[in-house]
Amino acid sequence: CFLHSIVQERRKFGPLGWSVPYEFNYGDLQSCILFLEKHLYNGQISWSTFQYIVAAVQYGGKITDSLDVRLFRIYSEEWLNEKTCEKDHFFNPDSPIFKIPNDFKYRIPSYAERGEYYKYIETFPEIDSPEIFGLHPNADLTFRVKEAKALLGTLRETQPKGGGLDGGVSREDVVYDKCTELLQRLPEGYKEDDYTQKIQKLGGMTMPMNIFLFQEIQRLDAVISKVRFTTKQLQLAIKGEVVMTSELQETLDSIFDARVPYLWENTLTGDEFSWRLPNLGLWFSSLLNRDEQNRSWLNNGRPNSFWLTGFFNPNGCLTAMKQEVARKHRADKWALDDIVYHTEVTSFERPDQIKQSPVEGIYIHGLFLEGAGWSVPDAHLLESQPKILFSPFPVLLITANTRREEERWKKDVFGERGPYECPVYKYSTRTDRNFIFFANLNCNPDRTPNHWALRGVSLLCNL
Figure (cartoon, rainbow, N blue to C red):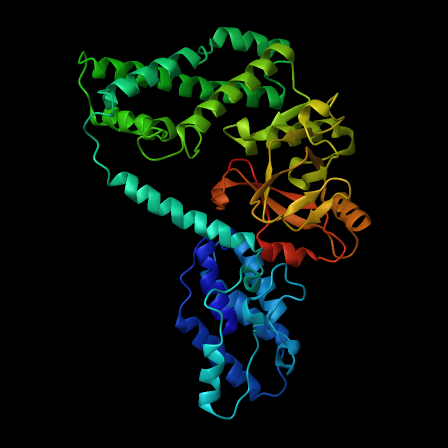
């Protein structure tokens, strides 16, 4: 029952809690209780069997995300075992970061009278600490921020759209001036003959990374063209020279509210057209940074470190890198299907500290760690600082290795307990669509990989 309540309430923390919010219900709990009851009639409890039924069959049958499967499995291993039946067992963390309200002890009571259970229930804290769920206390701040954003978003949508501002300046005048500013800062479009010729100088289209660069430039050029066309049309519509369509009206409202216009982020069918960021300022800054990275790559050659966030298809970048590494090991008969990603956290905190590219693979930067912090001197995970939800992550080396050699390397470097396999996502929405790869992170000596999995630790490209 305690496990059921925990997995239910963990949903309130959003993607930090579950990648997908599952609708677990009372029927799942009843089925597990019924199985346990019948299992007891057959003798001693097989905890591994019970864990499998709960985590993989009853509750696990509804789970679709692989990392959520891992999370529920860890819950069952930690709480559904013989220690749970001991009288002095508590579900409280061994060393909580913050004090549990009223020093309450979460345990399984054993009373003779019903009234004693009622009295025990009345002593529960009004608000449970996130540490009971396995999360860091900062998770409560994440929940509060999510609720506040939802409230402010609702208030914004209910505000009237018409009317002028103080000083007699209308919404249209403000948006017109903003469009002029955006057009002045917007980079020029790419000419296909020009960038095709420059790519040939970089080695031509026989190199996978050059093919990836070609595709990225094409997509960025489409975004630049879309922004320029829409902005100019909106200015004409404000002056009354063209019809103010519903799309242009939505663009006007979005720019006035400092939001990203829908058609700048999405196609007509709702697919991702560019990239998704919370406000127009961050979105446009990302456009300029992406353009700068692509043009620098074209004009000056491959960068020493790649800003992974600045790519439309980061998976394509890593796949191209893997192909190049496989070609270098052609004599060793490396097959693309038989190699996996190999990651190492470097001591570089900034990309300008890197003087040259790695012999194999690539350096990537611009990632943010959520749910934990990182100790650069000790090169391992540590608990987050209070009220710091995201922390910049050092430069990461990612290359390729054979499966057998990679497993051997993990045992040599991380020992028997292994590393924490940290998922890397394109956005904070943790779905398979936004998943990129796993990074192997070293755990501090007193924390196991399961601890960080319960913390919901992940690396994000965009906040």
